Length: 218
Image 1 (tube, helix red, strand yellow):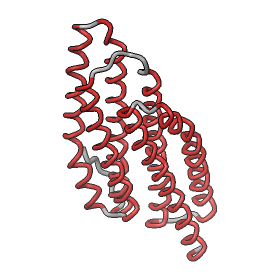
Image 2 (image 1 turned 90 degrees about the vertical axis):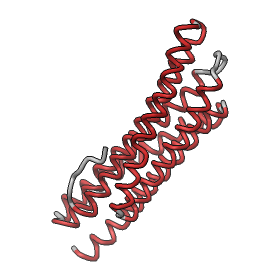
Image 3 (image 1 turned 90 degrees about the horizontal axis):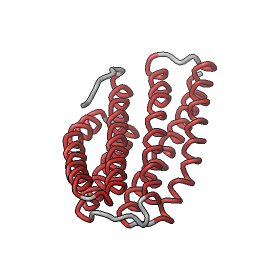
């Protein structure tokens, strides 16, 4: 089993990192599209979500096949299980990026709040950076980087969400015409927050990959 399994796991991990890159691109482009009011870029994120879903399904299927075929144990099993678990978090992060992209289309033609969108731009950038660092830590099986990433962004992202939510609710109370836009802002902030949560999950799976221990990092 040794050499053949090793080759299989290298290929599986390469596919996982490819999926990680696709999702990372979706997260970054969705945030940029919302900030830039770029419907064309948003539509590309929505369209490319199919590629993310197809690759996720393939990785899951191949992971189960490898477990059934090779019956790996200890460290080998941990590598396959880690990918099998983490791939779900990647796909869900991609779903929330797609939601942000859809919001670009939904808000078109509506009254907007520039100050809130500036905070959304900051949150989108921070979430994208957190996601990229999480994937890097997984690729390197670097539990120290994973722990540092989760801890350094957790509070920051929560604060940015609150900075978006407060003025959005205030605007709704003062101006009925801004309600639909404010609701979209809140939804975008929630979607970005969920991407952050899934990035933290990836960091937790990195620790599992390195140590075999399942821990919570937030």
